Length: 437
Ligand code: LLP
Image (cartoon, rainbow, N blue to C red; front, side, top):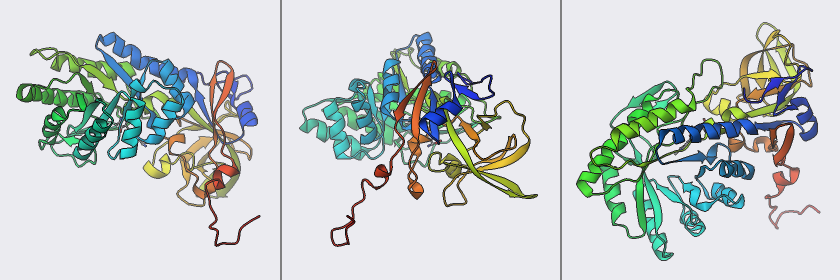
């Protein structure tokens, strides 16, 4: 998919470059992003919304992969950007991302984060709870600013892959509940606070969702709430944000729909539920993360050791693992992989891919069919663009790999490989201990 193909040497090529050459140039392991595919995914969202005729914003959920070069792409594609911490906000601002297109999420924004975001003049806060609502108003008051907000509501729809559950009561740390009246109270309080401008509401129903039903039902519930609030309190929402969660294909059996299908389901639901009964059509916002970057990322590893337990299993160990991709260990996520240097060879054995951490749980893939694996082979794990680098750690003091973008035969470093200095750079030996010279 994307620009990936197998070249005449039988090597995996991405963005017009042989991946074995990338490993030789940048070292191993290596995160490789197919920039054309990232941009294609951005455009699929934007074009689908343009086709709907509604006003919209597509805000990339930067938590999926937040580095300065990625912020530049999002900016160039005309999209907005979600951040959930001062670190993500700082990254976006350092990249020159227009502040008025930044939305700030999170269930526990600190006073410092709020002040930083107001000073930067970001476009919108997505307010999660009553404490934040009043804190934000107070800080905005001190700074003599009026800040735009959405209220995050919990609509009682939760979606995972093929299932969604629609219940009145949802046990979630996020948002104002629709079911118990707290969402209504939040709207009433927010519209009384002089330094806040209430634009509308936000809902996010889950991640890696394949079906459109969850989005449609969330849109209907939000619309029902909007109509109620308008009749009761005279507050009209200008913006409805339906969050992210659009699924991608990691392995066979994952069946995401084309982006345009999700977007049409959402925009149709908005058109059906607003625009009549005198309710003006709101602007519609979404926040895709995984579906923008997930399948554009590939991680390249080198095979170091193998362990064959006859009749039981063959382990193939690579030079990374749960430090660069914690998702299999955290969520039992599945991935597909191939030998990038022998991509045309037929599978000959079933192996399990182990990481290099001192922990049995550090396994990347179980029971993968590969040609007979040799030490030094390059393993390419696909669909590692979302929540991999973003959730990477220095467990075992392993240095995080470099990240590169490839496009049209050109490769560019976007995150340097970590150095030993990065590993010990923040360590301090207390003065009362013997110092190293
Ligand atoms: N908006 C909000 C408010 C969110 O909480 C999230 C994800 C998104 C948008 C983006 O969702 P996406 O389109 O990427 O599904 N670490 C997990 C995923 C956690 C998602 C958290 N929220 C994983 O690796 O699967």
